[in-house]
Image (cartoon, rainbow, N blue to C red; front, side, top):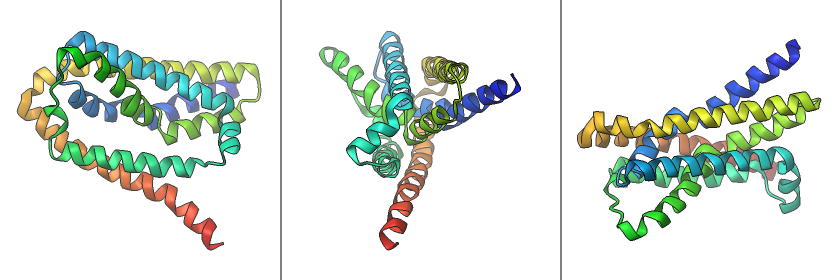
Length: 210
């Protein structure tokens, strides 16, 4: 029982840290600032569902997929780093909140951003995918697998509520406050992007040298 509790705490804390919904929130705020509340909720719900299903899919078959296609998590980190860097550049220049969405384009816009970049790679990034594969291998019984899936589900529920509540924060901050936060978070996102990029590039270069 102690091992099961320890595994549950490890699963929850590791996924919450790697998914980092509080870090995703400013990006969600800026990308959905032109949407009505119901469309923000719809975007958050779809992003969380897609991310949850993706993480579960990789937990069940991630290693097989990587081996089948001959790709590595390091390659995924490099691509994620490039996406983050470009996104951080836009945030740093306060571009994201200037997006004006026509009424006829709202549905398409919501579908686009809820899958990429919100669900993948913001919520379901290289860290979360790697974590799901590793913890799935550590799950020694059905009970452990169930606990792992419950931990992922709880983190996703928390992520959903954090993203939905971001609309209230937008009203409190106002346009100026939102711009300031976006620029600061843009800088942080770019730093994270560099870390992602080189953490994926370093093992590949070492393998090439060897």
